[in-house]
Image (cartoon, rainbow, N blue to C red; front, side, top):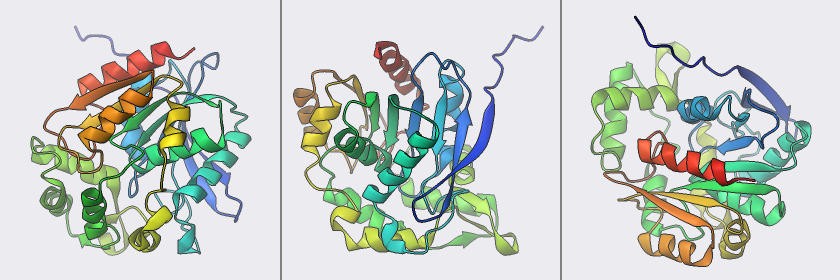
Length: 293
C-alpha cells in the first residue's frame, strides 16, 4: 500500500508589464489568501525554477509568487542593458505588487534577491512583514563579487546535459563539495535551457553582465545597513553557507547584533549560495512563517 502524498499546489504562469514595456513572467502558486503571500526573488543569473521545491513546500499554506527579473527565463530581455540593475528590478517588482493588489508580504531573497529585499524595505517601508536573506547582507565580500565577474555572461553552450553538469561542477564545485553528478544535473536543468541548434545554454541575457562588470551601485548598492536595520524590525532569517565568499561571518554577526529579530542558520559544506531545500533551511523558514503576524 502506497503512502498518501500531499497534492501539488496549483501553479499558474502569469505576466506583468514593466514601465518600459517589457513582458515579465512570474509563477503564481495558489495558497490561503487569508495569510500574507510570500514573494521569492532569485539570484543574478537564476530564474523562477530555483524556487520550485521551496514554493511547493510553502504552498498551499500560503500563496507564493516567484517573479523572473527582466532578462531571465520567460521574461523579456531588456533593450537597454543598463536597466539590468537592482534599483530597476525593484521598480519592476513594485509594478507586479500593484497589479496583484499586494500591500504586505513576506520576502525570500537569494543573493541579488536579498539585495532587492533590503532595497524594498527602504523604498516600501512597513510592507515587508518578514524576510529570508539567503547568503547576502548589507556588505558584500569583494572576493565573491570578483568570482561572479569571472563567470557571468560567458555565453557558453553544451552538447549534452551531462556536459553542462560537469561544467557547473568545474566552476562551482567548491561551493557544493558534497554534490553528486545527479545534483549537478538537477542544477543544470534549473539554470539552463535547450536552445537553438539543440545546444544547452544558460537561461539569461548575457547582456546583464555589462552593468555588473562595471561595479558600483549596479553590482551591489552601497551602505545598505540603514535598509537592513529597517527590515530587521520584523522577523528575519539569515541563511548563510558556511564557506560563503559573499556573506562574511563578521557581517552576519553584525546583522544579528543590529536586528532584534534576526535568526542565523548556517548550512555546512556549502558556499554561495544554499539552495533553501536543505532540511535545516526548510525548518527555519517554517519557523519564520509561523512568527509572521
